[in-house]
Image (tube, rainbow, N blue to C red; front, side, top):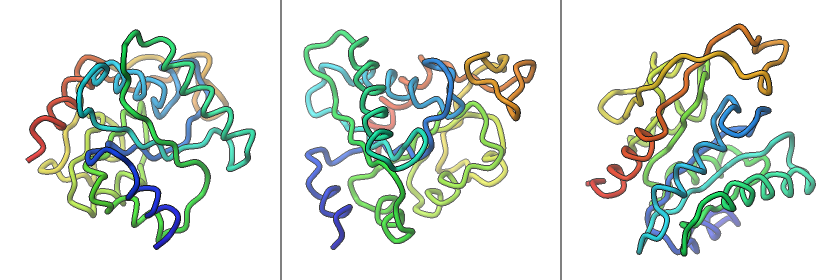
Length: 200
């Protein structure tokens, strides 16, 4: 028993989507790993639903500090405030670093049913590779390095378009003239709903 296992066991929902990755720089919908858009589409897809699934976010902006934790919560609450609904599905935050053993528990916990990663460009994508060993389904983008190793039998590859890196996300590695992948939010919501309703 670890604190993480106890936390997961005590989650009310029996079906959770998992996202693992840093919440990098960029305006809403423009961060490289698309965390903001992931939250928004999840909330819009499952708002006002009885027995809705939950979303577990294993993320941080900079580090595992209390200030960083507060920044992540503020970002989540800012997105929640844009969704008009009587009831929103739950989002659970796991913040900071975990031991490899705890990451293994997180990936394999029975309440974690699928991984979502709507990245604009991974290059490789270690969490996707690690999670693929569970043989649980993955919903991700149909572009970048993870296409080299993900098994199509367990993976839904989302359509989208190539678009310029947004100025708010550009830096010395992500130059503004470069292009990366932008998934269609409507398709993201459709496949999350389909995964939840037709999991078996």
